Length: 211
Image (cartoon, rainbow, N blue to C red; front, side, top):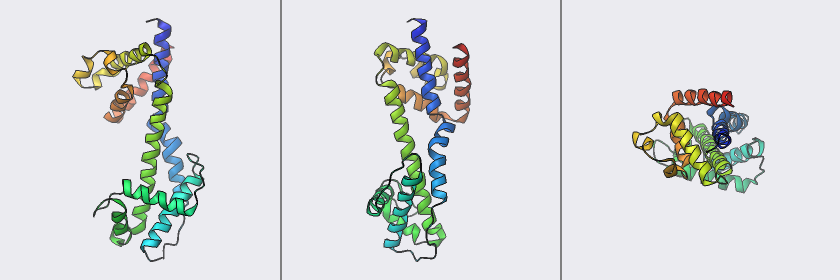
């Protein structure tokens, strides 16, 4: 493989790591969503009922989607409530049970911080889901169009540089075996711990210096 091909593969790796870096994700996704949620207001003196919970959670979703740069999407209130219900059903976890019913139990329980706990989990889930969708888009847009030799070369470089952080069985495999699983390799590195993230950052500087 030519030096030019290796250089392009290294640049592709650098780009993917930069666009999925924790600091970058916080700046582009977490932070804006959290800032939008901070200025959301509702009547905290209202007694909590099923209708109240649905209205407040739906209003929060509408507010975030409209004011956060990640979305800039205006939802009608009924759509906001439907989205809030879907979020709670998919991602809510209470001390009692999961889903919307668990959210209701928490909203009615002042010992669990009431509706504030429910709103916090909605924000956390929106961040989680938005991150996952964005990262999948990065992988698809940067990797799917690459030819097979380039994918193999990317795997080869990843294994050379960071194979010591992977299971021993990975290091004994050929690059071709992982050519269609590059996102999995990157996710494995990303999920290890913050120390590896720092090492990855140093390695990205090394690649830049070499270029």
